[in-house]
Length: 342
Ligand code: SIN
Image 1: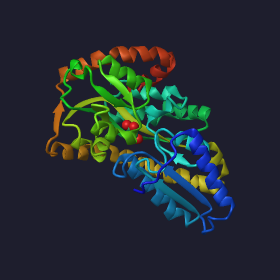
Image 2: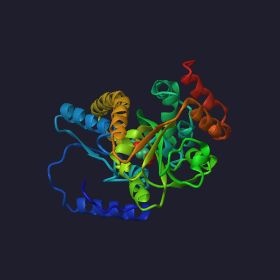
Image 3: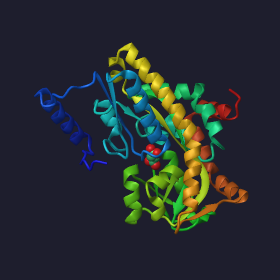
Image 4: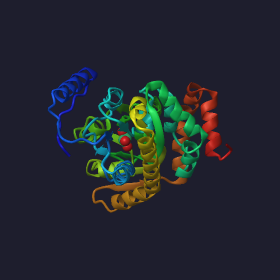
């Protein structure tokens, strides 16, 4: 991955963009260019459901567009990271993102934090009844409020807890500093367990764990494995306490600038790539678990049914508190979809 130093504040981002625009206007970038350049930036490793989805999308578009459309995939926060990717999308410095659903709350669409509610979903089939149905469509439309066009959902999987000790009982969390994504629900969840929630961009998690800025983290297994966190966290407890998935978004201005034919081509390629990523998600999760279970110096702990039930009971007030803040209909609709009643 190229070690480019990237601007991390909106002002620096604007200055950098202005500089790039001036260079282009001066005719510096004269190489033959495709008619459409689509930069897809994301924060995880290539060998994850999102990384694989992005590569499949790129391959399909290049196969079908005959050089007219170029897709650049920038993984591992190498172009933009959690702090600046949505601003970059608004400013036209990237054309496609796939942030985790937890990150849309702070971007002004708090309804997406419903996916963070502890133990909302029992399995991926339940998640898909929400994301692939009317509720999912309606949620994607709400992204329009923040100048984003939602194009589809992608699964990663269920989050597990890593820490310097096994986390079998709620009291085991007490006093831990836990890295979380910037979601109100995730912050509340850690506070309910007596832990301190520390919001950090994904790209900083590894270093924060290595340097003791945080003690613990919650991740789906493919992220835990590909970020090398097994070397830093001796205990991984399979809590399965929450879901982590993504929405692929673009900017309406970019989408409107495409010809109808190109738009159709991109939509079809993305639908196939998302189906590919969703098919892979469970398999990558299982593969990661098998690898982690064989990893020396890492102990993987399963929770017994009663331990899981205790954790769930402990987190129920978080669920109930946010039920009120989401308003009466969203959670009702989500739960109907989960139960297959809509
Ligand atoms: C991701 O999977 O995109 C990163 C999630 C996180 O920030 O923990």
